[in-house]
Image (cartoon, rainbow, N blue to C red; front, side, top):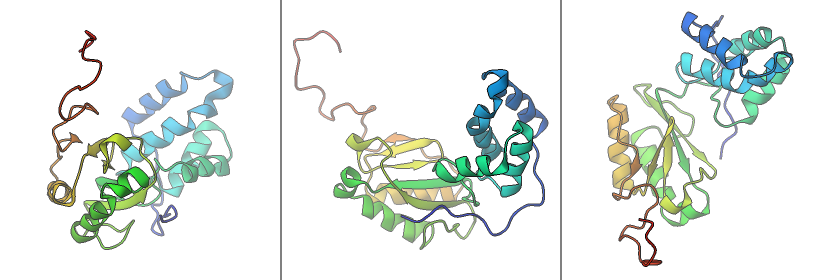
Length: 202
């Protein structure tokens, strides 16, 4: 896995939109007045949503002033958590799990699909700048392995061909259907329940 990439190209300024200023104030009100700095995580995510799926350094400085906290504290949070992107990732950010359950069920075939369809390297935008991909640790859907996350959605029970079709859609700015690609609902057994059949809890 690669380290978190910080973009070399940075905008000169950032500020919340009028709509997001209202949302930011509502988020801050969820915390005690003397603890408003605790809102740093949801506000970083709000910045990311506003700024085409990534957080520039100037936005962290803006947020530090907004919350009256040291800039380095905001930077520490943004660089620690994988949910924050510090460089452009495109409109569709693909995260492929390669932890053991996904690995033994074909995760590296999904990586092959990423390299063939999106870009040859991690953290590299596709030619049309629509998406990028990265290899990540466990995303918590081991029973539906192999799987990947695109923005906020999970795509599960994959193989290389299914991944290629999903990538074809996002490269054409179409949102593919999230969930299982073997027709399962959540993590239910594919052939229905085979144990505890006498219990009336279906």
